[in-house]
Image 1 (cartoon, one colour):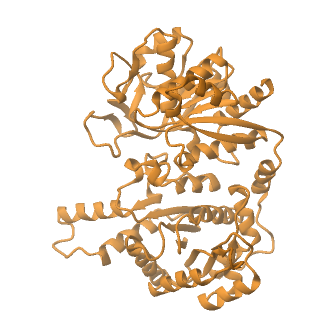
Image 2: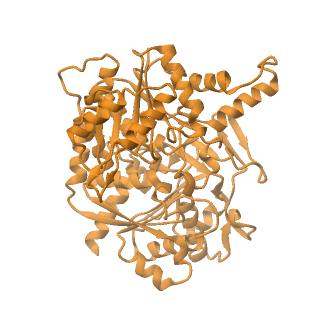
Image 3: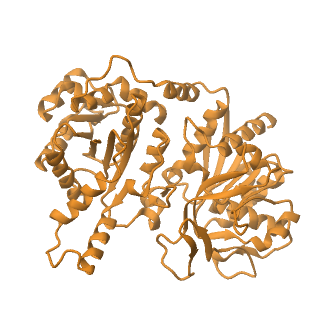
Length: 545
């Protein structure tokens, strides 16, 4: 029977609960346990799919087509366990389900209430599909005391009561701030946070204390005394040089040992196998060179909007044992001044145009593609980036000066258009242009067939792949002949031959555009082949400059 680890946060947000959960899961894996991590999000959106990246960071997509929280990306990157739709739930989806059931009459006229109906739904979500697991880690979004998270806190309180102390452990992540004027770490915020939590019926078993300076033994003892936990269960969490050093750091502080002890499991004398993480940290800390990648995007003011992309580039660096410096470049700034564009892009060893939605910054992205094509700089276009590469090729090589996408409005040359139908596991999917935005995209993992003699086939080492998608628009296959005459080859297609998946320029040092999001499947211990190859091309370019 699965054991449950419930992770809460206090004092402030952004303390790294998701990273802590991912690291703890990786440590339990290293001890031979089977794990899965789940995220409870208190907001009322049904999913993050229609939320601005500036509000919530990137939208992470699972194989089964769920639009989920970016923390699920951390979970996958650290554990290698593919996330599922059932691993992320929001208040919005819970309330939507309950209201639909009430409208159908499923409650037989009963009064529908937060307790028991909402809390029962949360508990059912936590316990679903756990038969083959040793540990289920459940992260509660937000901070203790938030009105919107109270049903989740109440649900895990009930689960502790129902399952018992042998099957449930509470880990509370809290802040121990440093007051520079006093030269001291202050424990009072943590004390208040734990007091708030105990007032809701939950006594934490392990405290993870985020702090900027080492936590003195006296302060650990003080926190333990006032918060009613063992001193050894007060685990300091200092900033690490790299997020991939965090599992080793937490292990050094005894986090995994204390969590297992809280379950009554005495840790075996043999240490867990952490060779995977020591190798990654060695590669990150001791690079044999460095490259600079220019990412020309729309949401560059918040790197979390491209979190998986950022990490996939780092993974490409790990594969090649080089440090990857990412230069975030605002595409809008390239639309007015060509000299400015050249000044910004010339120092780059490679250029990447990521996914996105909307017209803002599109001409700057097209100009960046043209720069990479004409100067022979390695180029990687992802989702919208591939579409911009096709429009650039159509305009500047194919002679279609008015080439555009219907996403930006009516056009005489719709090189990119709305996908109205496509095949999925459920059969033929159709979409109307005027339909709802939420959940209407081509979402999740889909297969593609690669040309046997293509560059991408040699990179993948196979002609059949499966990658995750998130898009409403697609390159118009009717323009294939025009684009290929201009040297832009359609190297990957959907199995039915209708949807372009990959384009490339074989006569270019490295020029690839993909309709899917390869960054979602990249891991530090298993870098995605496209990112490994892209960074390898950047290394070659750096030697030419």
